[in-house]
Image (cartoon, rainbow, N blue to C red; front, side):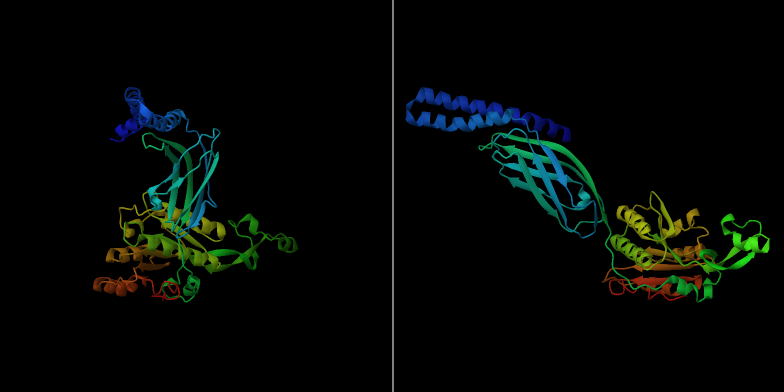
Amino acid sequence: MAAFLRKLSKVKPAVSLVILFILLAFVFTYAMFQGGFVSWFLFFSFLPFALYSILLFFYPMKFQTERILPSRVYSAGDSIDVTLILTRKLPFPLLFLLIEDGMSGSLNQHDIKRMYFPGFKRRLKATYTIRNASRGEHFFTGVRIKTGDALGLLEKEKQFPCKQSILVYPSYDEMFYKSFRSMLEQGGILSGTKLQNDASIVAGIREYIPGDRFSWIDWKASARSNEMMTKEFEMRESGDLLIILDLMPAEQFELLVEFAASAARTVLRNGGETGLFLPGKEKVFIPSSGGERQERTIFYHLAKVKPDSSLSLEKHFVEPALAGQPTVFAAITSRISKPLIDGAGKLIGQKGLMVIYVVKGKKEKLTPEETAMAATASGNGVIVHIVDGENWKSAFVGVKQA
């Protein structure tokens, strides 16, 4: 059907031209046989419109198109100002010009069309605004322009490729921050959390032991004592946060992404470290790190993520990338179940902390079964925290150790 319509659109101008010649011949024949002022006035009145239509048929629709965007990166909900600039060499008078900018349906924008009356202008500038941009990677395909004659007999349109893409990051909320490391320092089920060296804090000097790093050798102390001496660093518990996002289709999926973005940004902006695991069709694992670069990396993947997982979240807890992670796990989901709690308990064992954030809509309530499961989760060393529109900002502060 689409192929037939494309072929029809190609022959339509030619058919219109044939009809125009038939009408012109009919009016001329009428004037010749009828004679008189009225018939010839009708012919000469129709002639300019017919000549314009004929010239328009042979007019080459050659435009140079340029799309100007203020940026390539936005946040969800932003307004995007788009400017289209069309230039041509031949100043043929155009009665009107319909300009339509093509884009992917993911932007949820329809009928981005503008009507202009260019006349002899060689350069035309069209502007429009995309309001309330949705999260994701969006593509502009091309610019379609359409014109015609005054009688509506002849129409010409052409598509000009003008491909561009923009990335819309998920929106986020400011959250009150409480370091998970302060929870680790309280002991309890977390006393066995894997230790790691903090290479920035030197606690003392000791004799060299085979296996020590070459960079740890203290050359000045070695020269004084005439023996190989190495620096001894302070041992600290890891409080890094690893976010695991549930990618199963759900009505609240955009809320899950927004909460994940808010959590990651809050930790990073407060000097912490965080990572991200996206168990979708194409799994993404970003090890825990800190800084602005890590924030951009996480937001980039959260902007492109889609709810394309066919397996429940607990099925992904056995991924090799999660094994042995000295970190705090934050599973973000919209549903809670006993298999999820059991799987979380097996993942952390006795060496970590798992917080399951159950994100609900403002008017959504937990079912009695979900409430019971949340209450018994502490038996597996798992913390379940319900997040809705009222306690979004206090999501970290409201977490209490099991």
